[in-house]
Amino acid sequence: MRKIVITGASGGIGQALAEDLLRKGHFLYLVGNKNISRLDGLQKTFPGKLVLLPFDFDHDFDLEDLVQHLVDVDTVIHAMGVSSAGMSWKIAESIWERSLRLNLTIPFKITQRLIPSMRQEKFGRIIFFSSVVAQKGIVGTSAYSASKSALIGLTRTLAAELATSNITVNCIAPGYMDVGMIHEVSPEFLENVVESIPMKQLGDVKNICKTVNYLIDEKTDYVTGQVLNVNGGMI
Image 1 (cartoon, one colour):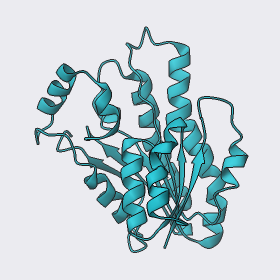
Image 2 (spheres, rainbow, N blue to C red; image 1 turned 30 degrees about the vertical axis):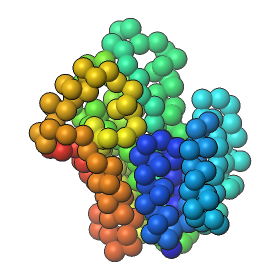
Image 3 (cartoon, helix red, strand yellow; image 1 turned 45 degrees about the horizontal axis):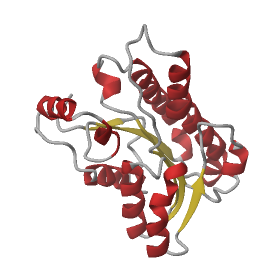
């Protein structure tokens, strides 16, 4: 049994991961925003197997207060993220800073505080979530793309730093999945998205769950610093 923290647990991918990992017997700390009530059903189905931690990262919060709830964590999965849209020369400074804070800075700061205990135990699994958008150069996504691209560099650096401590650090870069942000787009945009995918369909989130389970397995100890693309062949 692992003790796993999932940030962004109330999002589409986060919810799917939480249910899958609970069914496999792990203990979870689920960090979510104001929509964390979406996870109430899991608390009823898996009593005593999870802790719900509501934190609004858009406002001032005590990071140390969050971290002190994360006891004996050996696995960190950062599924949190926020989308943004706007041409680079028009994007507001507040949107740029919010994208970097929520997609990059907060995941890093949480991870930074959990690394010492993982190093002491000589074991850990860290997973960040980037995006196909960070690798393709899509018009109108400068803030989102920059923040998600930075996670790739962070992944590779942490992997090099932590390799001798038996801590792997990897990054999953989903394409367009059937949960989460995709439901915020127009039907016309969705049609164009599906047409751009070689497999001509949105990704089933079960593929993300399988990839995460592979990466957190204790026997997957020679895979680190990698970006695993789950995107239906878009790259």
